[in-house]
Image 1 (spheres, helix red, strand yellow):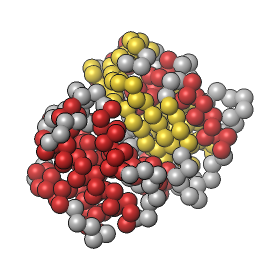
Image 2: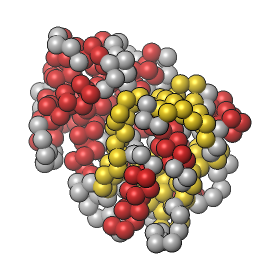
Image 3: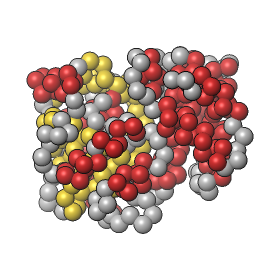
Length: 310
């Protein structure tokens, strides 16, 4: 990737709540953006553009290039992977086709270990890892809503991944110019684990009680469940040798208390609609990782009982 005299091109794979917000903010700042979507959402993006309802940016309708996975035939300098974990296998061919020798792929998923997982499936392509803090969701066909004041994207390279600092700084600059708080991580394994811990506790608590985040912000059984889940994942981080910069339970509580009280996790929304969800990656994968390390995890075991038959 030549970062000195070339405007970077971005491909957003999965234009849902997260991908749609990234695409919308980049497009609003005049960056070159293409989107991968499907169905009626794709048709609306093609016909009417991306309609962005944002607490940070206001109301906008933005023309964006939008295609299916199969139709996309170009190359991109930066590929943001924003699909759910269960869809990774369906887009590895697209990543290979859309990459040139300087392309960097940045997965923005909720499940720990996604970057290395994708890297194993697309040898020869430079895959980083990343995580995001945002409340964003599809609010209609071709419409994306962003709630609250938080839009923070953290990305970085795993140990052994060769990517220049200049390349990452060029991406960071574009994101910053677009109004996204972008941070280059010095330990992306740590940072993606922290996000996994938080979103797991948030999504599992919300889905278990079927409540918005305002109920987690109040003292009581719901909040205690969130705290219990956070404590158990904090113990997992210690067993895995992940060096945290702060107390994970305190951090998770700080983030949950900063969210819009009416917000809910995407896993919770998917479950309520009877759609496929990330329950495997956000609940059962973490539970299995705890059990593999010999960690007592009574809160995760308790909530898992409700979802084992789904």
